[in-house]
Length: 78
View: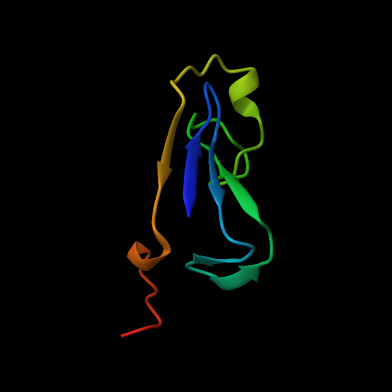
């Protein structure tokens, strides 16, 4: 799994093709290779990025975090 903190933009997570989105209303499985999460606080579609960072003056440095698959915990596995 890889998290990319884009310069002045969102956190992009490479999901490996699938992720589960859970909220108080329930959960849904999403089949996408990546998801972009808001880190500027301005998105109207939180937690997802809607590109508000491009117009609200958000600035932040770029960074990348990579996890070995064996380190990613699966709550469904004991």
